[in-house]
Image (cartoon, rainbow, N blue to C red; front, top):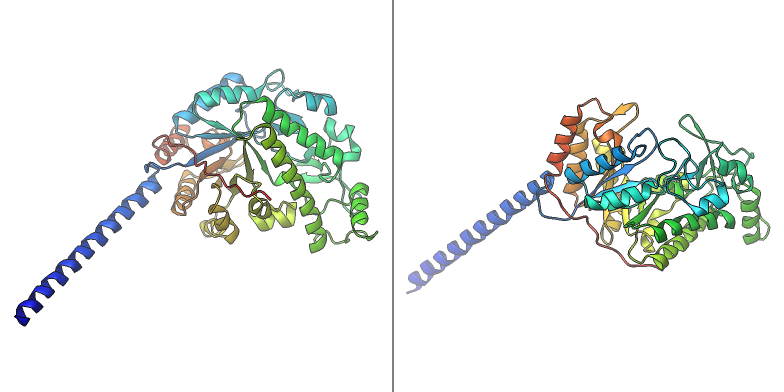
Length: 407
């Protein structure tokens, strides 16, 4: 009897062991299939697939029919999001009464842009193609040094400690509006509210230009404000002094909070998107403390710019603690460089970076910028478009999971 019992138990144990092995094998195979489908973009999940549209080194916005055709191509290739610039070169790219009152021009007068409402064109045609439209406030507090805005409002321009104002961006001379000046804040907020109130947009996006280069902030207004809050003590002569950096960054955070609530007061469902560099660079060089903004609930979509050729560096920046923390409560996408005017990025590199992003369960990707997707490349248009079709073989919805911690 004991022998029969032991024999029976052995059979049962063996059967259970085989079932466990079989189930484990099936789970492993399913995970492998899911992982493969995620890499190929064929899994039925939500994924943000965006691209920035700009009027710098790019022709996409300069003709109505070209813009319409480009949006149609993006829809056909299963993109689902566009981030079109609406504030650039010291002008709006839509008819703005706010800009007219301050600058004297309601619209960018450049041939191809003047006498058009590009934002209305993009919202109308983009939505027809199933694209989410999130206007990009590209220049933020930055303006060309020779712009009507800079020339007409010199008291709005901030400076270095030695009084100089010009900040080089490539070959271009830029100046920066003082983000601490109440008139500047009112102007920028009014532009943003004007867009949110008057257009059928799905969100609005800011980046590091919603901060300030760290060497600036020594204008008389800002120094006076600092002294007022520090018993007459002037700010540090070292622009990288931690306390001086934090004071300015906190002021910008206060303004970001004000803008967030102004947006929500006019359109509750308008997504607030931010597309910064990695936190350390944003904070130390542009006083943009997006990690704090995210913790405060002021960001509803983060699109992190990770423009790196070195794959190890690219991956390391995806795994920063503040990035992983943000992933827990808001959609976090990764901005991938597809090329620049004089620099082609091979499709193989782009595809690999998309794969590494998917492997880490990010909400999606966004490409900088439209012209370099396929028009400005050493590879043929046909080859590039076929490669993007392979990355995005079918239509999917954007990842729209929101946070909700505003304090």
